[in-house]
Image (cartoon, rainbow over all chains, first blue to last red):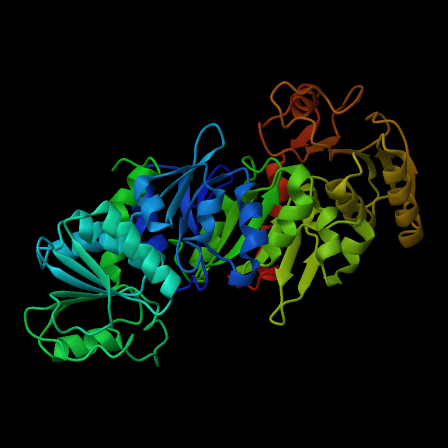
Length: 263
Length: 263
């Protein structure tokens, strides 16, 4: 900082993008590490993604991208190299330009959220309700399965999306009971909202979740406005809560390392 | 500063862009004015301009563009409203998105350089040699003609470009003697290099300029590496010199006002 002519950019793309916390969170850490690099919010209107994103890839000073809703899946087609996690999830949240000009994709959403959960609730043996099997939801499911969750219920209205995730997880993690189900909290230890419901102040709950109870941990990936209706209800009913900022915060170090920043 | 999710961007586009001084010069002034706005270098490879620039225009958080070599002319086709100066020059160096989504174009290159020259040499009555009639050169020619120069010699190898500028200036400024000529310093009071010759460290002079003399003022719009071969020769021969940074510095306030920043 400040941005100068030589600064290489990491474009943070999404629609909307104004509520993204990553630029404000990571730019000071990048500057402190002495790198001439900056994370720049780029609001791509969703309908223009197919023409705009290929154009952004050709910019000479683009070091990479951090990708948020709704582009995590669409970006994958532009990557030359895809990590195992990103391939299993079917989405990415980070792309890096290598020295030879090719692009490497990875995903850190699940790692970030899992780190935040671990501080409050041991994921090993836990019964997890995952609401939403979009890009972030799938990354979270993979991370919980890898961390030793006993069971994962996937609540998702889109059949193809839900069945794709369940069959992929079942094949990769035979020790974890994975099935589709309604978004009811009862019978679960950890509940995760991985839908965008809650981004608008007048959004309600992401489905008929029923009652929460003490001993449960409820996580909402929606970063703002915090707390969401879901977390307010969970808190009122005695459950522990983790706000959306935790996912972002928990993956910060992993993202910086992916982009070659050593702190 | 720092850049955050809500930050609106002014893309500084060029090929190359790494030597552009405007981002480092103006971002601290924008931050000091309290605006959530940042100038971001975007290196568009020249051959990709036709596909990349329209894509950048669709980004939702683009407040505008600052345009440098070689895109000042090409951008004009994308503006809905063009200032008189930009129209006469046939190029722009700034584009602003209005509230209704339309784009307004203007050019401040000539104003910036003229302000720098005025501090050392009165342009009124001066005989000016202008080497290069590209976007910046034409802007400089218009500003010297407006400021009351007695004569302007335009040294430019491209016939169409040179004749277009001369005929436009002759029509607009009947009191100024405007003609094409070789890039010889003799007989001129002020010499301006408005070509990119000098941007590479092993570039020579922008033509066979002959000898400079005391009383002359020699200006080079190339911002780095400073001083260029042209300015080293001018200085050795007793002429006053103005480096490329002056053009950038002299237009800073005008650019900020164009983008709505009041200091």
